[in-house]
Length: 308
Length: 219
Image (cartoon, rainbow over all chains, first blue to last red; front, side):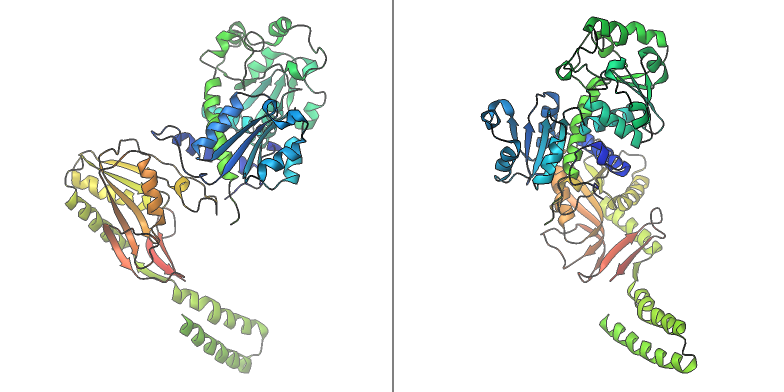
């Protein structure tokens, strides 16, 4: 049993059976990470390059750790210290790296579709670690694993995605994944940050009232306001955003229901999430980070088969 | 096998002649053809080596042999190999537990998927590993259903070392396919030693998972 795709470019291309396979495999890798020797030799003959054309801490460290736990050889690449700064094209850069016999590419880029472009032109397996405002598939998979652990499953669960839906690749990947696995979704946030036809396009509920979304859901996935992707002001100030759409302890106490709080990180404390909520009992933010390594190990392991 | 096929070809030939004399219908011709050439050899080739009662006796013998060498199980642990070895180890542990009369016996299961030497030729779906005790300085008895090339056991030894340094590792298998090893690995306890061709398959079936409990050999 293998994945139906040779690359992981987005959740959009995956079948529900692929998602189930990745989550089940991740569960076994999670067990590996609890052992005295947190490492398996599965990918010891595989070389992986992490191409990060955009900044990242969590995702890059998580991928690197996953690769090392699988015994793969790891190369790291960041734009600031490379020939991209000298004007080399992306395809040239990647082809140069591949000619040194690299088997897999993990890639983050600020342009939507960059990994899809690469997949058409190079023979290596590609894992998308976030492309512009399109998709961030491994984040959605680790969110799904965390939801499954916290609530016992995905089928029929009510998930609210709150915040900057417009610029969030995490939101899009989550919507694809959760819909495929039979969960219900409500997106909530300011009207300027929710795409106009999202209800028709993805069959999700839309509300501009965060309290209403919280009262409805089992799990709230709170997203960061992506100021770096907003070219024009879409709300008046961060403080105003916090008052209208941020999640505070007071708001959680008012809804009188136990819900799970998630956040893909990095958190802007006091904007979308207040500190006492982020560190509270209902938050599973650090479990998400822990699951990230296991999910990425599963993805790399399942994509590593090679015709001999 | 080739003799059987030759014989069946002859019989098929005869039956064709007969049926064409009796009633030269195409359906009858095809039917006899299928029965004699395809179905019959299959039935002949599927040979049962051990039936349910024999398996049960063999497992009891294996358990007692293990007991003979490890009277006190304080320093000995049992580890069954996923996915099919655990059916054997479950039953051996059951016999051991009745004989130990309530004394503690550590029993774990080990999945070796991530340690296989052919891991990238075919990606296999991993199973659960559950070893919730230390194997440091313990006698470990590995249990599997069929010992064939020895590669699974090689991987199991690698996997085991990631859990600690055992004092001694022993191997117990239900079926030992001798003369087909690709690595220098031999069992300490073997239920039944058989000679089978490389082209043949030895399958241990269990009531819980398959239709019946038996060991069969197929072409």
